[in-house]
Length: 384
Picture (cartoon, rainbow, N blue to C red):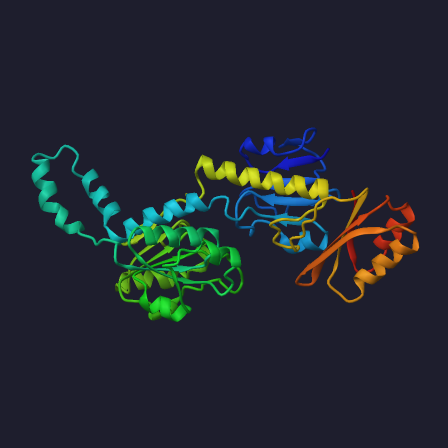
């Protein structure tokens, strides 16, 4: 049994994937787990009992990752759960980028009550001529779950697709349509008529689209950003649009500097705003929390390595530790000295942190637990 705190409204689907007896709600005290969407946790107190935080979505910039890591709190996200919803919005934005649809709709709204409406429409529509996307080149920067879905869908729409991702996973590569060509970034920027970006916001990606980037892009290109507003230098993108270097900028992250600028379309963060996406994110987050709390398995963590092993013995010990030499030997020596047989052992690292799962043929004594917990490189120890 565990207590899970909701810091945002979460789809009720999550309840179905938490074990019986779990308490899941907004008024939970001293939670074992937290589930949230956009709630800003940076000033939120982290209680000693807290084991994990699950973000029902991809971005985790609203969670104090470093603080959680130092306290041995696993932070999960739900990559791919909202991929279809975001893909569909990007496809919509491709058409908005090629055709002056929003401008035309706004113009039609001004014609309410006008006499000879059909003639006015026929005469005025020439101001909103656009171009088709079929046969154009789409550059997809970031080939995770969303980027791959977008790239494959664009192939189906008759576009030539270039993809760029220096960290392309095996899974991503296997799911990528064979007609999608991978490219270096400079070639993509120079070639693409449309560019859609699907990378996380990190110190290295902040303002990755800036004056220098726009200078490399094809004249009249369309930029679509459904990842994070901070990936784009707003002053530079306004200048690029106003000069005609960019035909249009479409973003899911409105900013005061962008609103009302001709040929900039601001969407109010609708990427994952579908009931299907919210259900998928809630389901994945609930599964991640339950699997970690019940079995110590980590899947889709952003601050600790993913480590998964089926339960195979009487007792399981999990140890969060610094990624330093001789950790395993010191821990196993304490276990062996107590005469306990190790049935299975799995340890993985992520940066300067690591996570160990040890399955034991009998429950360790309080002394064994205390001795391992007292090792200077151990952050947190659990016995399941």
